[in-house]
Amino acid sequence: MKKIIRGLILSLPSLFTLATPAFAQTFTFDTARVPFTDLGKLLSNALILLFFFAAVLAFIFIVVGGIQWITAGGDKMAAQSARDRITAAVVGLLIVVAAFGITWIITSVFGINIFQPGGVSNFPGTTTPAFPDATPQPGT
Image (tube, rainbow, N blue to C red; front, side):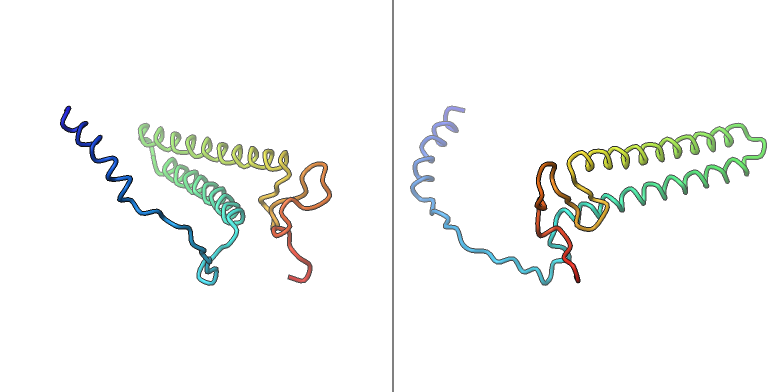
């Protein structure tokens, strides 16, 4: 162990003296091949798609649970499994609706509307848009 520590201590000065400095350079971002240039719009669209697919998935599970319950016949285990599936789907749907509501409330409090184009409205107490580039221009 002492040899390892001694070797590290002896090698650190040579590491610092032999290291070459990295100089910053200018970087131009080519937006022609990038499908998005606004992270806010990307996250907004992703959140809306997530809510949509979660609601559709919950609806599909409710339908599958209903079909499973109908086809259970007299089998108590199959009927219980179907009831559990429907209950889980309804709870999942309630969670999605609650998440959507919480998102709506939080965005309203902060003056951000992620569910419409433009995304950011005026902040409270200001008359100019918070992010001028995010507001849609007339005729575009």
